[in-house]
Image 1 (tube, one colour):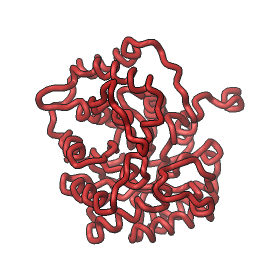
Image 2 (cartoon, rainbow, N blue to C red):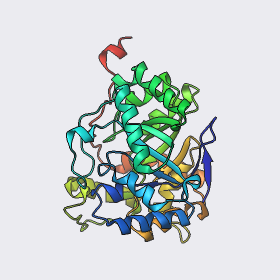
Image 3 (cartoon, rainbow, N blue to C red):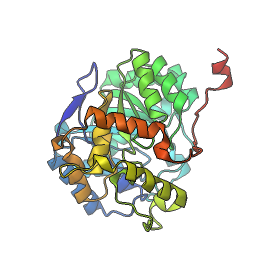
Image 4 (tube, rainbow, N blue to C red):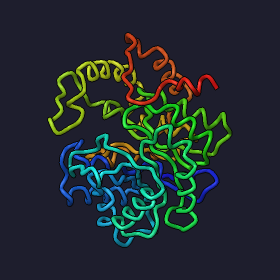
Length: 346
């Protein structure tokens, strides 16, 4: 395993992290507590030190799993979690996965949620606290950012940032937050098939001269970039991919065929997908969706694989710019992908 350190911090993370949403939300099948903890132990044995949770993942289950899996290894872990959804008041049912329930980013709610997360994690500090799916209102809420600074000064959090979603979107929330606030980390969706708006946010940090680095989720485009889907692939009803239109599967397979040149005897397509992300030094770590041991081992071995060449990276750029030779698809974004009228007029 290799490690990277967020700029101007002492926050050192493994290049491959473990996102707990696959094992705690029910969106990727059902895991027993034993199965979930076994996967986490295997990840740790393979050098993974970054574990990314959220208070809303299974009504706190993801945080509880970290505490149960690593009762004595706190100083060897980097724990990231997210707050912002008021799942306690609005009663999300554990096991249903994340859904859009009301949020509360008031100073009182932030303090309360942080204390609750610390209790579930059985620790006295979180290494990276992320505001979960903020809107533009939160970008400009000074009281919110003052509260985060107070938590940092108190030692309850080491660093803070934002995590954007729940679908590919929230472009200007991310860009404006990077420009206006001093945030250590932005977690967002980014992969070879879905480069917008992730690249725009990363470029915004560079253009603004900010030290913000990026934590990448959906690294394999919901499994597409693992290269194992066929036209006959059927997802079980409990898997969120079963709700996607068939065109997503069929068009994705055609794109994957154009990327098969990345596969070698020493590197899988799934490993190449992570290498493509890590070729950008603005990326702090990656959070591939992990749901079995074989796949976990494959991803953890990425640092041992031959790196992508400059020619290979350029070919990927060309394929993406041409939409892999397919007819353009109208993206269906949930988030803010156009600059608000009042902001564009400024």
